[in-house]
Length: 479
Figure 1: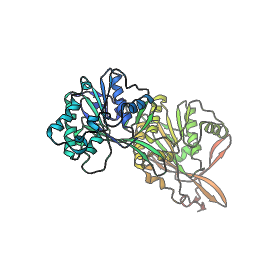
Figure 2: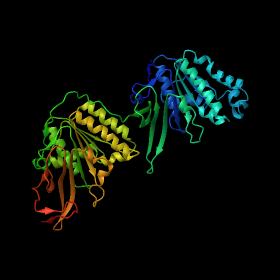
Figure 3: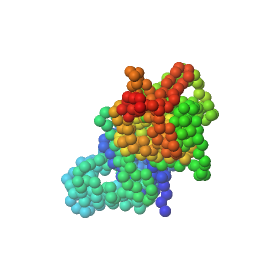
Figure 4: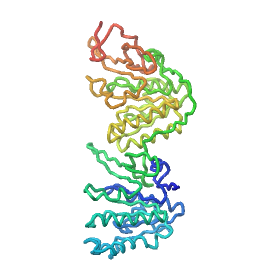
């Protein structure tokens, strides 16, 4: 029975459901600057903190360069339990004809393997990080030689119950992907530059034997403390007992009537429309009513600062909330995983009744693909619902002629309530008109209403426009 070993990397142990399996070997791949050395150092110093003997075996970077990197994160490779083996500076390896021309005999291969396995520093070690195995791979004329060397070293580590991480440069050359099948797990670090110039760092867990790890791509940052991974994985809402849902008011009798009586706790509400149609103000209306009930609400605002939101609440609604938490979040420099972790951490900390995201479009800037955004929302919505927390989202529709454009992103099907706002022209006047398009829990009003916003009075919603049609085309006409 293997015991889990912490990677020392915040978030990664969570993805691996506890860490690495003790005594097994893992492959770490990545291009230059992807974070392989930092990963290895962090893995080793997690052992040092537990009093373990660890070994850094380098075929790539000399000790001085590794020491400088470690120092920038507050790690000292001269610690008593940290042993650095500098194979870069050993002329019997780097200048050897055996390595760069090819081994001429079985005895020479065995000799090289023993130069590793018989190292005094490995005696009693619990963790090993090998940096620069690609140098051996690229220098070997025959892939079978490289395979034999790596296989023998891994078998030695496994036999000695040493947990090893082997770093290798990414390659697309056929026949060079040799280590993968020899190891028990495989991680790929990447630095991805999107077409718009936004830079993301990701770790892809391609393989993990011995447990139900969350395979796939996850985002990470390199912080002053080292690598931090942000898992986008299912969460336990800790809601064991069944409960009866409560129907809550939005704070507007007219909007409640349109929705069929209000909104249920634990539901997902999507407010969609063009910029300026009143999405944020409808969102604030619901948060104000939540605050009046004495419940905590959280608003993640991507377009307005905390000060602007506070000013809007005061001037438009004449209200100063006591339990509303407003967080201004910039999508630039933020990744989807980090935001996902921010929301879930805040939910545990504040236990809110409403979590509002304004607008949800900004999350698209934080993700590499729309599928990743959809998956994150698919995980977040049931987590909040099980806790009885309302998820309130606004969505800016960009095409006036296609009001259902947002459905293609896999977002609208998740919502329980869908409110649509449009600019409408009637008799030469531009009006803001809203309609409820969906109520998953029952019937709802199927009419149009004009939305007004008055300073100091908040939202004012008119009577149903039963004699008018034209929401879909943008021009009200009397029928």
